[in-house]
Image (cartoon, rainbow, N blue to C red; front, side, top):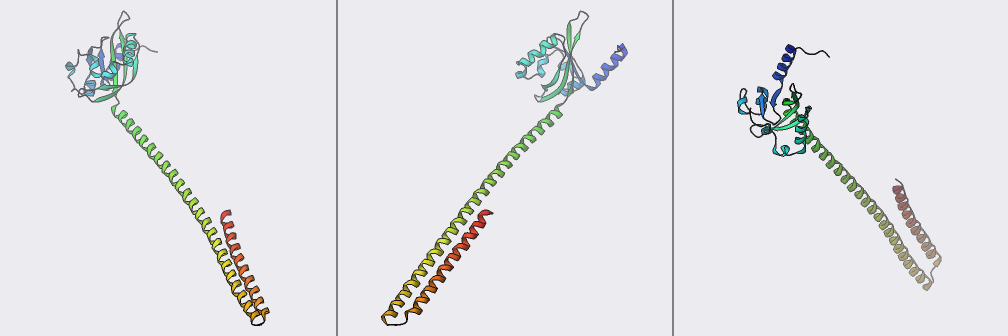
Length: 245
């Protein structure tokens, strides 16, 4: 790989400075330099670097993060002269939150020691907010889908219960109808039998021809009995056909 000339290196650094938020601080965390993009990102106006130079870098770090194991790892890594990068949540001047995609670059002196850290960052706050909004929408959608699935299952259960109740009602109605037809047929047969027997007895008592009465009783009994069983058979046939469906 070709080594950059001094002019090329300066030009590249200027390009980085114009398009990224940059802050330099020493290993104690004291701020050495900031550019205007960084100032505006954290809530200051361009040219107000004097308001934060000399202050500790932790003014942009949430207290909960400053006491975390991750924050200690952050400083240990930089102290060893190693790069550290990632997405970071930082605090602006007004207390609101900003999200930065940042790389912390240890700067080594001639003796091989780290003497300062250059942080190069870009503001990704809107991207993070959009991602969170999408996650919320996705979670809401999943909840609605879950509710819809539960409602669907509930409707299916209610439908099956209604069909079962209807089936029970139909079977009960068929049984009651058969029972009623049989009872009516038996009552009619018994009634006709009683009446015909009475007539037969009167005919014997009055010496009338009993053959006609006996024949009439037999014919009526047979017709009633046949019709009764015909009705019951028809109902049972309908019931069987319904059950097979």
